[in-house]
Structure formats: structure tokens, C-alpha cells
Picture 1 (tube, rainbow, N blue to C red):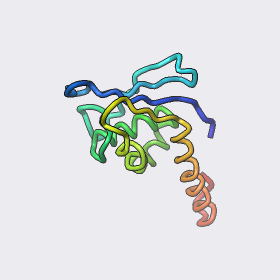
Picture 2: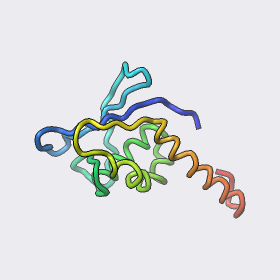
Picture 3: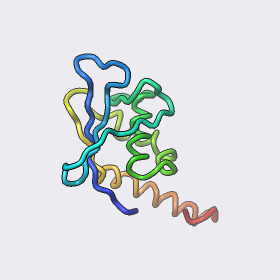
Length: 125
């Protein structure tokens, strides 16, 4: 997997979020460029969330994985990613998550799927 180098910075509107005000900033490796993560709406039409295992965090997980590795892989793994990372993100402050952390979690899972498919004869991908 070709690794992109990004940092995801979780920004919560203060003091109380209005619908859709929480967002995730995406920074490049040099922290020069940034853009606002596009919300991939699947479960939560009201926006992104983190710090627990609900529907807002599910959309945050899907949105980050889609940004980093594409929709096909994101749809396969976003619920597991939600519980492994997004539900654990601090609700206070401005926490960050790096693409290397995500790849280090995701690559062994994808390799396991490849091995199982090879062994059971369902393909190599």
C-alpha cells in the first residue's frame, strides 16, 4: 500500500457544538497544507463526532479512511476503525491522529484477508 502522510486534527466547536460544526482538519506531512475533511454521510446527517462508539464517530471513521485509502477499503473497515481509534479520541482539547498510526493498524488486517482468501481459494485480493 502506497502510504500518504497526513495528520488528522479533531476540532470541536466550543462551548457547545451546533449541528455540523465539529470537523477534522487534514494536514500534509510538512503541516503546510490543510483542508477540511469531507463528511462521508452514511449514518449521521448531523456531522462528525468522536470519543464514543455512536453514529457520528462511525461517519468520522468512514470519512478518514475514505480520505486516506479510498471508499472500497473504508467501507470494509470503518466500523472496526471507529472502535479502535475514533471512539478512543479525547473529547477535550484538539487531539490528532496520523496516517502512520492508521496504516500500522490497517495493513496487518488487509494482509490477513489476503492470506485467508489465498488459503480458501476465493482470490488474492
